[in-house]
Length: 230
Image (cartoon, rainbow, N blue to C red; front, top):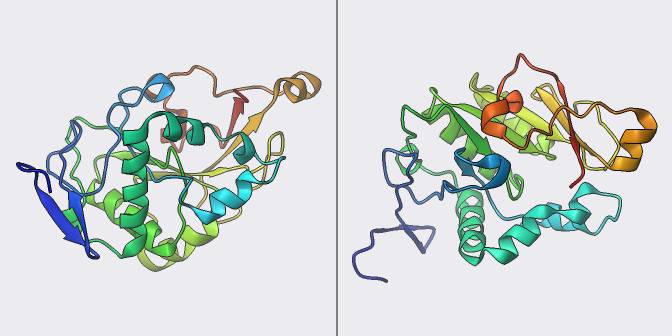
């Protein structure tokens, strides 16, 4: 182990304890706190889609939005980020973490995203996110997933936190789905230029600045969020 670094062992593996610029305490769960583009100044906790067998199966479907997944290119380009997302995947799916291992976000943090580069793979991971959310009641979370049936049993058992907006991502381009579960607050769908023009689709996710928009972090805004395919 590197000298001068603090580590915690979990499920037989050492994890470096780090403090994000958004957190009050050190944690073994990685917070992405230097996001660029539309996610600037928004903390995110995520895992790698390249570790998730459900994500990898969807990538093989040419009609799926996952077939052109931006996260794969980002993870491959930023190796340190990719390793951090891999560690998060292993950590969050191994076992339910004690509350003191989750970061306490600073009072100045108003919004946080759950899953920017992957998706939930197990009920264990879903319960860990539930614990992270409930530990930070002052923060409004937006949680993206295509796997609501994995998350739903956790909410049935523990309750749905009031400080989370559950966003179900439509798996196919140009096909807006209906919510698959009672836990869903919004549906997020991506449309290509040809479909937008042919069907006069009104894109309401295009400002490229999530922190200024915050549509996905409010339950009072549109239930259908539409983005143009990049």
